[in-house]
Length: 172
Image 1 (cartoon, rainbow, N blue to C red):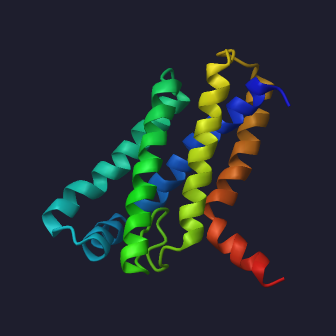
Image 2 (cartoon, helix red, strand yellow):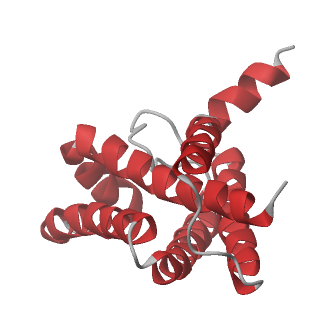
C-alpha cells in the first residue's frame, strides 16, 4: 500500500473520529454536561462551559485536519487523545466504573476497551506523523481521496462501536 494513501486514510480517520465524538455529544449535550458533573465532580457552572468547549475543540481539530492545517491538527489531536486517555485511565484505575459519554453513549460505563480504542486512535495518529515526516506528498487525486475516505469511514465505525463489536465477537 502506498504511504501517501495510507497517510490519507489515517488523517481522514482521525478527523471522522473527532466528528463522530462531536455528533455523539451534540445529540444530547445536556447529558454530556451532566456526565461531567456526575463522573468527574465538575461543578454545574463549570460543566456548562466545559461541555461546549470540549465539543468545540474536537470540531476545530477535525476542521483543521480536513483543511490546510493537517499537521497542527493531527499533533493537537494526538495531545487531546493522549490527555483524555490518561485522565480516563487514572480515573478508571482509581475508582472503577464510571460514565464517559465519549461518543454520546451516556448510559454505558467506560471499559478497558474504550481505553484501548483511544490508544489505537492515538497510535493511528502517531503512524500518520511518522508517514508525514517521511516526505508525504500533500495532494492526491480525487478518486484516491474518495477511496481513502470510504476506508476511513469504515475504520471510524469500527472505532466508535469498538466496545460493542468486541463484546459481540466474544460471544462467538
